[in-house]
Length: 572
Ligand code: XUL
Image (cartoon, rainbow, N blue to C red; front, side):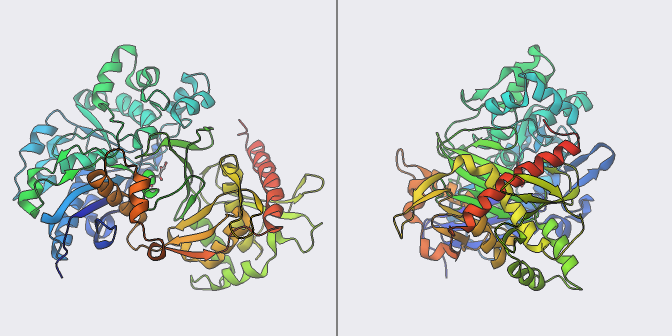
C-alpha cells in the first residue's frame, strides 16, 4: 500500500556497507536497503571494505566505491517500491575520522551532473586523492606524538579537544597526508569527513563538517566552539598555513539540525526525489547511534559488534586521554562520552571456539558461563579470577595483542599471576573482563538514584543500559552485563529493526525538518517514541551484593591493567 505523508531517509556509510533506511514522521521504519562493498563492488580490490598496506600500517578505501554504492542503494530502494517524491528530508552517518580530499573542480562537477550517468564516472576528477584513510589506520604514530606534545601533554590535548591523539583522528591523518603527498595536498580545495562527504554528494556542493563529528579530529576546541589555531598549524605545517587549512576544512555550523539546502537536481531527475527534499547535516556513526532513541543523561548504550563501543549522552565534560568526549550532534550543552575498544566479538569467539569441539554456536559457551560463579569465586574469601583477552592490539588500555590472567585478593589488594592458559571459566571471565573495563571507565559519569520499585537509594550506576549489535542477542551476555554494570531500570535491547546508526540519522532528519522553534531532539523524538514497540527489556539491572562484589573487582581490574602496562613498558 502506498505510504501517505512525508518520509525521511537515513544513511550509514560504514567500513563494509552503505545502508539506507526510510522512516515516516512517526519514526516507523518503512523501507531499507544495503550495499555490501565486498559482495557488490569487489572490482575496487577491497577486502572487508578496505585496502591495506601493512608495511606502513595504512588502511584506506576509495571514495569512488562509495559513489557507486550511493547509486546502487538508491536503485535497490527504487526496486523495493519507495516513492522518493515523498522524501522530505535526509541525513546520514559516516564512520568517524576518515577524510576525503576534494579537488578544485569538485563543486563545478557536482552541479553539472548528468542524471543519465553514474556518480563515479562523472566525479573522478572531483577528488584530489583517490583514497580516504580509514579509522583502522595506524600509520600516524609520529604525528600523534607531535599532537600529544603540542599543548604540553596528552591530558591538555584531551581537555581542549575531548581526546588525546589517536592514529585514526583526522588532524594527525591530514598532517601525514600533507607530508606524504605534498602536491596532492596543494591541489586539495576542500577536506570532508566521511559523513560530510556523503552529505556533499546529496547536496551537490561541499557540505560543512558537522558539530558532532568535528570533535573526532583533534583540532576542535570544544569549549570555544572553534578550530584551535595551534593544532591546525601543526597539521598544516606552520602558522602561515593556518588560514589555508581552515579554508579547506570550512566553517562548522553549531546547529546540527538546520538544513544545508535542497537535494542536488541529479537525484530529483534520476530517482524522482522531491526537489524540495532538505539535506540535513550528516554526522559520525557513533554520534548518530545515540540518536536511535531518546537517550537520557545516565542511560548508556553498549554496542557489542566486532569491536565494543560504550556511549553515553551527558551534560558533564570530564575528558581523559583514555577515552573520548565529543559534541552531541543535536543538543548544545550535551556531550557524547565514548569508549572505543578494538577487541570485542572476536575475543569472545576465540574463547567460544576453545570450548566448542566443533561448530560456532554459543550454547556450550553460555552454559559454561552460567555454571561458573562470579569471578570464579567458590566462596567470598576466595581470590577473584581476572583476565585481559586481546587478540588485537588494544587502545583501551594501550596494550599489544596478548592475554593476562591474574588472581586478586580483595581483602589484601594482592594481585598474583595464575597460569595463562585457557580454562572453561574464561567464558564468564571474558564477559566480566569486558564489562569491568566499561564500569571502571564510566564510574565518574554515573550517579546515585532511587530504586523506582523500593524507593531505596542505589549506588552510582547507569539508569538504563541499551545493548545493540550482534552480541546483544546473547541473553548470557545481557545477564553478566547487568551483574557487573548494574542499572536502575534494567538492560534493554533496541527492537526497532534496521540499524541503530542509520535510524539515528533518519530521526535526525525528522527532527531537522519537523521541529518547532527551540524544540530539542530529545523532546521531539521522545514525544513520538513508542517505548512498548521500540525496546525490549532483556534483563533486570542492579543485583544487591553482586554489584558491590564487582565493585571490588573493578579495583583489582584497574591494578591488573596497570601491571600489564608496566610489564609492557607502557605505563604513562
Ligand atoms: C570511533 C571509531 C569507529 C568508527 C567506525 O572513534 O573510530 O567507531 O567510527 O565505526
